[in-house]
Amino acid sequence: MGAEKNKPTRIVIKIGSSLVTNEGRGLDVEAIKDWANQIISLRTRGYEVILVSSGAVAEGKKRLGWTSKPRVLHQLQAAASVGQVGLVEAYAGSFHEQGVTISQILLTHDDFSDRTRYLNARSTINALLGWGVVPIVNENDTVATAEIQFGDNDTLAALVTNLLEAHLLIILTDQDGLFDLDPRKHKDAKLVRDGKAGDHELEKMASEIPGSHIGSGGMQTKVLAAKRAAASGADTIIASGHENNILLRILDGEKIGTKLKATKIPLDAKRQWLADNLKIKGIVSLDTGAETAIVKDGKSLLPVGVEKVEGTFTRGDLVSCVGPANKEIARGLVNYNSDEAIKLIGITSVKIEEALGYVAEEELIHRNNLVIL
Ligand code: GLU
Image (tube, rainbow, N blue to C red):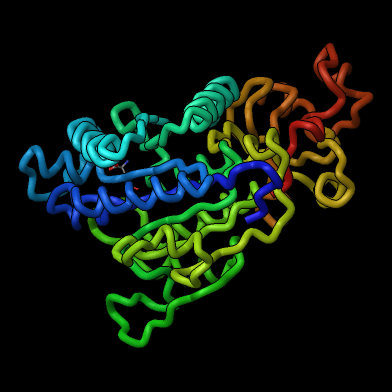
């Protein structure tokens, strides 16, 4: 947790659906009150806290009297709009009792990919934190169709961590942390105490451990969230929300749950936004020379190193750059639309005018708009 001097330590806490709704039986008001009290204690110790809470779909389902989870997306969205009311009421009751104001923030993917909306969300939440309000974030399920869904709140919590440059992400779940085997099936499964965010072995391990049937994430989305949060320098702790005083104990330094440490140098804010922007409009495949130039030499991407262009995009859209090994190596904002980019494949910058009849920029993606992954 690399908090700067004089800057309050900022924490994002994510609580999963299964915990919030007592495994789908209905809002666990006592547990919510308990987490709220811990968050209030943390605030009095000087921490800034943003809460990301799931549970809208599960609570909506309960309120509508459904016994199984519908598969149709708009029915899930409708259930979320019913449940979200109860969710926020429960948090408001617990926080307001102690004189702490909360706010509701509902976000979609689009709010992260559109630079203006992204900056607006950041300023709004920063203003709330400045006033001592506890923002409670969820996905705006009503409008989140498949293409603009985060899908799970682990990803959303990591994006919020990066948006606000928080120092720590705590993911509370119904498991004690990440195990090497599925603890529901293997009695001898061992808890992973420490690891590096972005470790492929841990990601593989997590992919074999399913989540509860109540929420939408599992261990894999949590481990991937840790990788994402690490890009802005935040460590992640995955721990059980059933443990007494879990939040206070974590911040007291007790070794509990799984800690996934951020080990890479944090990206600057603009590159962070590029890396977190999940709306990729196209793919450009690069040759070895271009890969070396952008990854090792810190150069811009020139058309000469491009071998293939896929997708339909306009100038300023985000595209993914794939290396000769067919792996995504970078993302960036393109200077040309997809039709133009196709005409520019493999040509040197001096030939751009000949190919298009004009020159916008000599780079396909300028260094300042490129993030290496
Ligand atoms: N936004 C969903 C809800 O509140 C949660 C998605 C998830 O389970 O992570 O029900």
